[in-house]
Image (cartoon, rainbow, N blue to C red; front, side, top):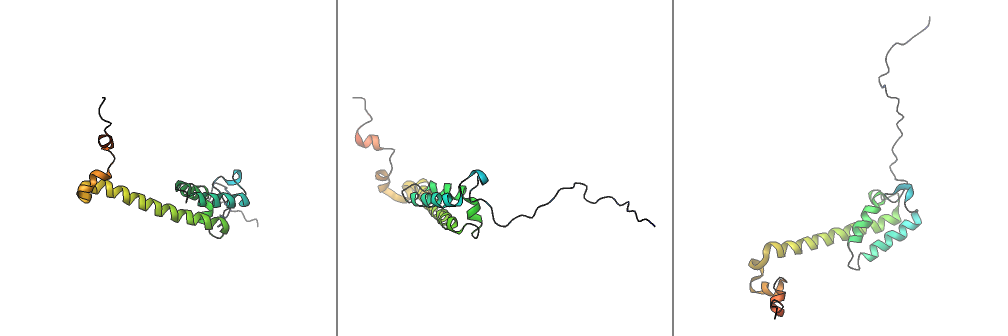
Length: 134
């Protein structure tokens, strides 16, 4: 007796599902077009150090470009060290800049009193006598 099964395939699309790896293969968001791991360590170190030279946006670039290394600490430990510190530095810089801007923007003259006229720059031309044409 011949056994035949006439049951339809429950999964009509025969896609092959590959297991997702927990660690990325590339340290940069560029994938295979990006840098090698040795070059990536050098670039991450440079971005981290130049961020202290009053260029904290390089810390944000470092976090964005090396996002795979930031997400998985075990995959690229040398790069992760610099990128994590860049993320912390950029978060601190953003918090300080935002609090400074909000203090002056919201507080203004009510917060600083009579010193406010010396702190603001919109009356600089009046103080230097640059408002007249003569």
